[in-house]
Length: 349
Image (cartoon, rainbow, N blue to C red):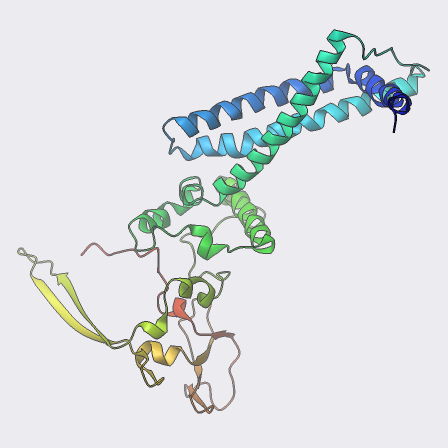
């Protein structure tokens, strides 16, 4: 294609796009959008540079401002620009004041060319800012700092988490998981919780109309991923073979706080060298189902165990009778025993 063939295309682009955009863009809404975008973008970039080369700030509210609110304001400013364009075009169209020929735009004008260069650079910078802000915002919402400090309801759980053996494991690794579906469902649930916390002061006035969050947080958590996806990524029950000696100390309420030691031998078991399932973990490496008739899973009238030879053994209370009772049917996993894996609340003694 010769250089002469490019002239009509360039001229058409200038007349059909550049001239109308500049003409309609000269309105308060679009100008305000540009100012909002520029101000929020410069502020975010400045904070990122300070965080990158300076000392990180542990204040969770700064993260909410710079990783969530400012990116939203930045995008809102970008949206105001086309909204202003369409609004002015519609207003002029109704008044019949749209010119047949838009004001001339001369590419040969040095000042105008510099203006186009600025617009082009600003567009590239805006795309980069939106991309980085989206990534940083998503990463911040997945951080334990956001989960534990931004929401005051989680303060007890976050305090226990920091001193637990799983303090190096991010909250989302257990509570959300990977993939778009898990992320979307978690954020929808988080939005519901945000509404409940926001309206908490008014919940006592109209409890039937205003949602409220439960206190304390109910257990068990109903939407955790399967333990074999969470726990067994690090722990392998088949390798916990043999016995474990456990010594527990308790102290009395007398003047000397007399110490009492309880010695327990846990027959952990597992899969031994002959591939036999033994002990606690060995039993659970098989398949056990149970039915709970209450929300806390403490009333369990029916249990079914699948044996190594393929047969099944059923344990049922007298009240359950010979049938299968109604209730939540669940495959037993690690969380049924280790139900406070990262949020253990130790008693005062």
